Length: 162
Figure 1: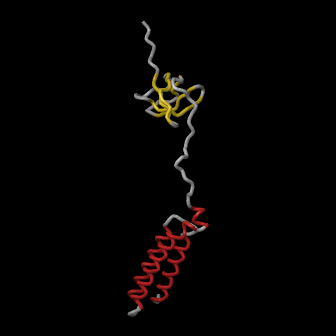
Figure 2: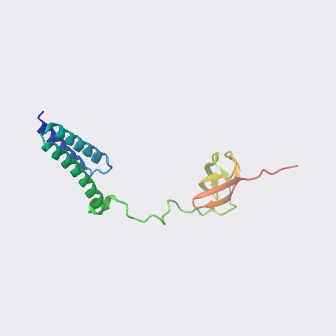
């Protein structure tokens, strides 16, 4: 293959891959395109006569750096960039709802709590966390803490009969 043909194919395919990064974000296509441009710079440097070899390599490296800078500066502000970027402030958001379980509510461990598991409290199946030791399924429990979405339970003390 003639050096100018290989050089042209590498430059064009690198440009296409970097351009496809707009529509298929994730970084992989852009990185591959940049590596192809670096390969094109090497091909141009070793195949072309002076001074075109140096101008080719420097030009492609400059184009790669310029593309990266422009991408980082302007793409997030573009319409497509805004659609692909999370812009909501999530400082006050919650990924859970606070359960309406009161302290001291009684229930039964439906699964082994090692330390997490499921308990039936006030007729509701709820994810719970054992306070200290593991609690076997079927044991009576009561709620000792409710913090955000975490409900902590403790096994009821067994009744002693004399």
